[in-house]
Length: 367
Image (cartoon, rainbow, N blue to C red; front, top):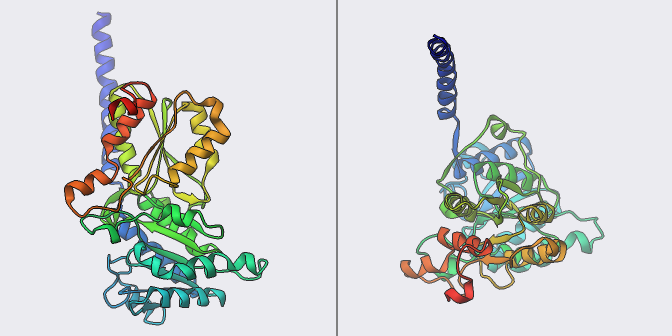
């Protein structure tokens, strides 16, 4: 009799719970989605609307609405005085952007790819990055250099390099690398509002990717702090740091590792300079292991700087050697099969994490 009563009570309870669960599921499925392209476009639009000093310039940003359609609709809304199509001369329009920033405007300079920023490196480093220091703080240079960075697909060595480490080594610059739509909106807004020159490194392959966004992210006042990383996934066995597209790879690797009983913590760096050393070291002191992931070259890379920071500040907490997962130390091949070998893959991250947790043969033995 008691068992029958229990079954009836349990059945009634389940009937009450099921509508609530159904409601949660419908709410979850209705979560807003936004592509990285839309996130960048909306951030530009809102900042241009809020501040008349903000303007956009670069190759094909106006009539063509951007090589990757990031500036779609902005020429029509703000006119040719604030959305400027430039000639194909990076050195020329970058110099104009720096000069405009000197006079209090807030230019957003688009490079069709950051590989082309090499044409303008003197203006970026010797003019934009150093002017505040050389003027004893009297001269601010509030401008943003933005565009796709790193490997795309089948575009060869001259269009595939990651410049995160290059620019992050220079005092006077801030370097940001968003991963998802939240990052893209919040960090681009922060970059435009910042009084210093900001290098904003996007990823061409992420432009069309959709990510869930909250109402807070969609609010026009939303802004992310520069210099603060985000723990995308908490874990206790190994810390994996990554930025830009590699964050997605690190999260996929963490899912695979979980099946093998390894609980990985994934840190989305967001900001390369300043680097959130505190969040990284706090994580390593918990997990006692570190894997860094980046698309760029291994020598003198972002991962090398992170490893140095951990060795300097948290060496006594390490239970295994730190390990870097990076691009191959060669110019990017054009052939698709070689290109894949030159860029870190999910399985590379998994193997590195297993080595750190002593779940597989050492790197030297496997070579």
